[in-house]
Length: 105
Image 1 (spheres, helix red, strand yellow):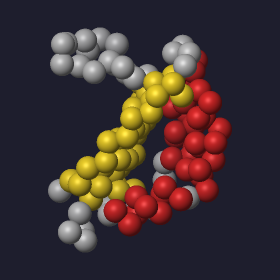
Image 2 (tube, rainbow, N blue to C red):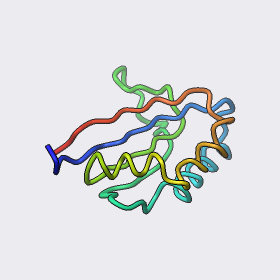
Image 3 (cartoon, rainbow, N blue to C red):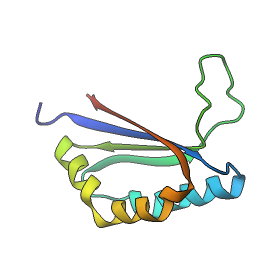
Image 4 (tube, helix red, strand yellow):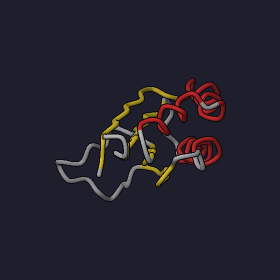
């Protein structure tokens, strides 16, 4: 569907999971990944340490949530120089990255 929004959710696990490293990655997300054309919603934050039910996946340090107005807006974001610079500068700190993309209402 042409007007379908796309949710782009990314979970980062760091090599060194310290408060400073988590804060630095959130700041980098804010700097490079917010405010892109076609963004409906943006947020980045850290794992909530208090929520530890058996169903909670706690295998990440920082979560990125971006909702795009369309797949085309998502695709443009993926190739944007700010997004590519974010990856180049931060990738060495990542132990694992998991990306979940879904069509939403």
